[in-house]
Image 1: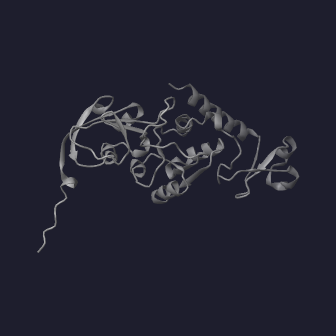
Image 2: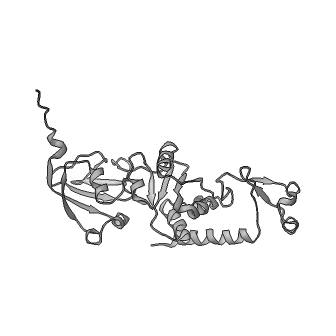
Image 3: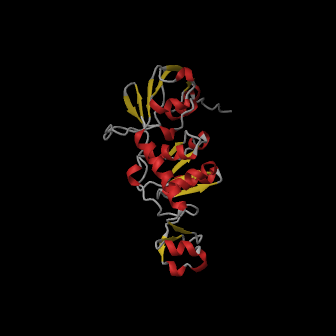
Length: 261
């Protein structure tokens, strides 16, 4: 009988690897590991697997330095490696540097999980193409297939290998979530308010009020001339009190997104 050769690299323990996570990546770490170097003993693995085993999803990572050299997620760790992990940079030019992460495709589009229904509606309010998915597997597949940014509070979803672009939403209040996403993706100057159906995500089109008949109250047709329609669900939008309320939501979120920190 032939004895199969044992793959030593798959199980070789590494005595000590040091890690340091920066900025908002510390959100995913226990308090004793935040903002400081710490060491871990682990089996030989990729830097991606090591980072995610510590609780940080790969979608939150932009730059990884191992012993001062930029590497990608596939770099295998070795004993006594020093790993520094960074979130996306806004003001620092990383062109020419090996980056583990990648900027979201343009134009930016989102897919949100079922727990972020209100956030999805607010993003549509601002004009951003945002799908809503009830099933995690379908969400991950849609994000990968359509190059969308996955928005979720499920860390397991963001650790799925096929999810290239994703973001863990920290806030729990929908308006705060809205401001958070606008800030994270630098969207404050890219909004196109009231151009998309809040329910269907379909761009709305202008419609003459004499075509509306009983679909809009008589008093609204008497007071307003500018109406828009969603061709998917038939919902009609105009600048009534609901418009003013939504405008305030958008203005508050934009203010929070541009005055933080």
